[in-house]
Length: 296
Image (cartoon, rainbow, N blue to C red; front, side, top):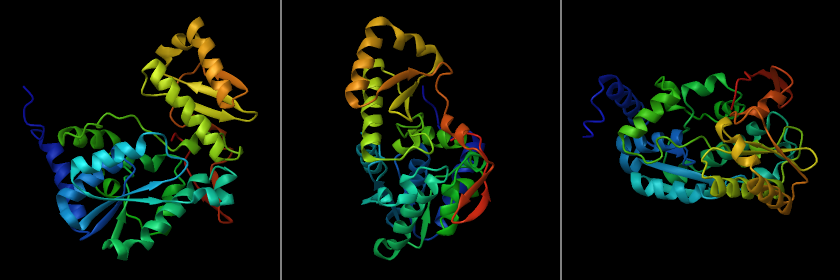
């Protein structure tokens, strides 16, 4: 009945390595979204450092409904100090133009604000929840992290996404199997401007789909001409084309501002818009940086 969640010596070793790495930093601020990766880092930082660790959640128009509330509750459950700040990436025209480097400008805004808060928060180092699997992905935000001196303890300890979920489950974190939830701006096709109105349309559409279908994993991708491309797991495609559901879905989406409503027959694919990145090189700040294009 249950048993010891730390019975696996390999899992214990990974936990101990992560705790030791964070302990060696002295004081840390965790860029904490409430997603599984940053939650595990916040949990580990609290265990390793106690009051010398603080979790910092950034709020902007690109945050999906319910994510802040969940992050606040998780931070309380962990017991970690928690601070909520506002970021203003929507004030940056480089972010709004939504080229394939959009995430770079978002993370530059985030990490710039976090590093500026170090003295006020009493921390020496800012850390992220990036794990080892992220290193082979389309992640221009990692360039911004490097430029701001952000450390990635999960990567430093060689921990993959599967390791992160195993640690979360062993620590009893209720979101150990939570699906990834990238920012709402990531749903907008590259080259289409990011606006508060568009992310609100996407947020409302996804919220309606989740409530109506009971699915945890849905994506509403925005394409040119106010076109919505819906992705759900393949086994649920038929549910959305059932006569009653289809009619209600079209009505709701058009009321939200979408002119066309489509269903992607390939089903849900994390980072499917990365297929629109035209080059293996990503231009940031006037220079070319090589970036992999494998997901996201």
